[in-house]
Length: 315
Image (cartoon, rainbow, N blue to C red; front, side):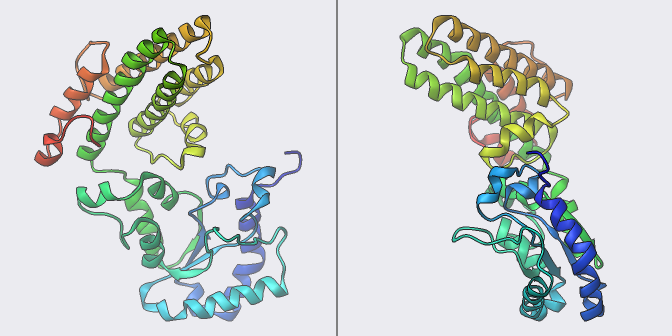
């Protein structure tokens, strides 16, 4: 990693030093109302890229987002950007692989619709439930360099307000049930039976549910599973504490009795941290150690009748 410069920083430097002056010269009227930046798919958009990331779909490129009134200008700006890159090649030019995300010019609404299915973001609880959480994470990552009209940023700020509170509570209730069933119940039973494959499966599901819960408690969208742990450790509420315990679980393994005992202890500590935070946020009042009790209490606090009527384990 010595001397490595993250992709987003390379893009930002190229944009402000080379692309923006050229855009203002060639399209002064559009430059004043367009948005530009790098948001969406790719480790560089989360700031997690490294030397390994350079093997595919990595390098300098940026989006130009247009107001709907300028939708017809997108192909023209795509051609302009290609010409700019030919005449002023950026360091580490981005080469798109067969499955790589297309970075180009689009309307603000078109970009969001391609990523989350809604031009202005989901509105109803049903619409919010339909969007994969990792896509919501991609919709608010990266950086917006300019936004003259403010249209792109307005949707971004709306999404950053997070899920409707009733839906957050429903997801928290479901994760309580998952944590209880994996870390507080089935893990011990699998270990005592010597069923190591099932024990590894249960441990993985416990880790995933713990990560998901920490994001919910922070009101932050959980990214693609490859980056979920790293992103979780950066969150202010339980991120560091839970991250440390989950790392110990991953290092322990389940095959040896002494180590499997450590996993039981660490998973119990994770659940205790979460129970304390649920009480701190006023989501539960119970002192029960078993998180199914917490899940039921959280569900009963949901105002939306339909969500409250769903089984607690359903998100």
